[in-house]
Image (cartoon, rainbow, N blue to C red; front, side):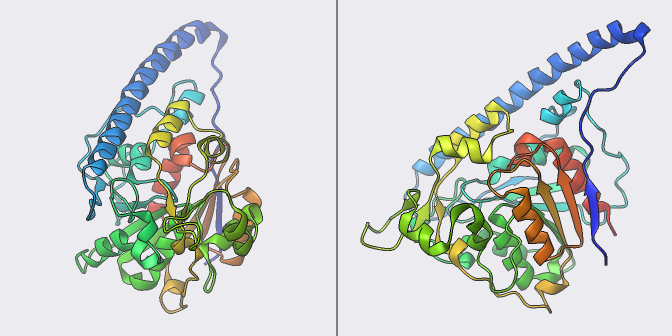
Length: 356
């Protein structure tokens, strides 16, 4: 199947007739105020949830508290987001009739440092149109209390996703959505459960080839793996300085410029209180992907064109070396389109789900 290349339309306000300009402006202002009020409430709820989860995680020294977020969340009408506000308070509507979508369950996999919490806008939007989102905390992420210094392999890191797929009914399939280094977890799952995954969507993610490490994708920005391990100031030595590094985490001010250069201030604040160190072992592990399993999967890639973590050139190289079935692009999005361009991301997710 040939590559499908789609460009998300640039958001912009519509022009009205001179006679109705004043009344339209009043309507837009009212709509903007309503959307801003709802956005404020939504952000407060998300921040409260993140703080509550952080408090919960402090109560447990051992064991795992991996949680799935989604499916049971209350639905919201007229979900506000950055795209809608940029469009004069008017949201682009997703087609109401989605009966042709056979696979309605989306399993959302976060990237390095994030957790299920980062998908809160995507969860609400997918539920709004009758789809079923499930967001997972990978091991040592979100409110899973596993010490990241103890996570050495991709299999360990991906365990919540693998367990979820193992417990799916035999006749049920899902759509996997991966962000950033979560792409390696999804590739790992595609190799293990090709029959349970209808489609895999990589959102500015590490869509690696056989024998490649997730870290290799970042080599253009971070240098070689050997150099990173020797010189990076962001490494964490959980077992002491004399032992190999066990994790990494960027300094907060650097993260703001790298990950969130187009994201709303409130989402950045949410991320700053919620992000955790990432285990190093999983991104340094070479993947073994076979044509008979991984090679039979239906993969799609969403490029983010104002990304400072994975530059557009790096993303273009990824899809060139390991071509997916379709490539979509979001203008004006940083590395976190679920924050900076949630409506554009949502429209593409729905569009991919509709592809037969």
